[in-house]
Image (cartoon, rainbow, N blue to C red; front, side, top):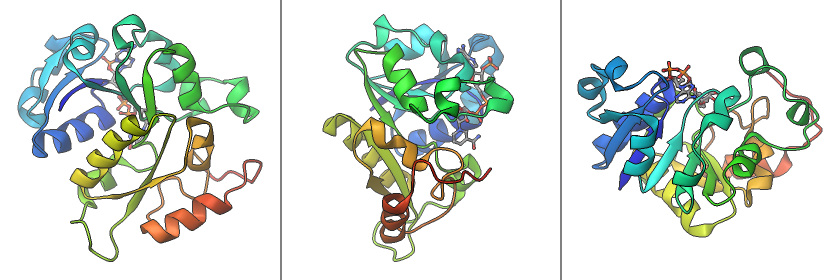
Length: 214
Ligand SMILES: NC(=O)c1ccc[n+]([C@@H]2O[C@H](COP(=O)([O-])OP(=O)(O)OC[C@H]3O[C@@H](n4cnc5c(N)ncnc54)[C@H](OP(=O)(O)O)[C@@H]3O)[C@@H](O)[C@H]2O)c1
């Protein structure tokens, strides 16, 4: 696959590196331009470009920027494309989003509202990039860690499942994008390692109005 990545921080670099190792072609981008990512070409093994170039490059585009910047993601060039949303809400960083504080929507539904003609899957948000780069295991190993995803389109979700598997993780599909709250920040599944069977149980028993941990 050709994967364009908007954001070249912890998430962009980790997903980019693992995708290159899995045989994909990757282009990283950030807000400041490719001249600021000179060494990343060698560290990650990816191409670097502007946001517009990364969006045009990717059959699949990963959004890996702070949530506060989600409205800067280009809309028309992403029409019809698969978009993997890795974002989380940290009010300390992103400022307050009253609709998220009220748990009336999710970060990925905000992005989907901004990108109405794109196919969004919420994935890779509920694991630290340190763990993503170090905890992958071959399929079939009994204690293989599982990661959650949510989305409205089966083919789009299959792309996230494939990447999870290539990076060494099982997948648990929680259903439509509107169910993505089950693994947002502060929920029991957020950045906690579980096998597939255990993650399924934890996600099923998560309450939307339950207490949030940090
Ligand atoms: N770190 C983790 O382990 C982790 C795990 C799962 C999910 N997440 C979530 O993933 C998202 C990214 O986190 P991160 O840790 O990778 O952040 P980060 O290290 O701070 O990197 C953010 C990247 O986004 C770029 N960026 C910011 N505004 C942009 C814009 N308008 N257009 C293009 N690029 C822009 C930045 O580029 P410039 O420096 O050029 O602005 C930078 O490369 C966050 O929502 C975070 O909560 C993080």
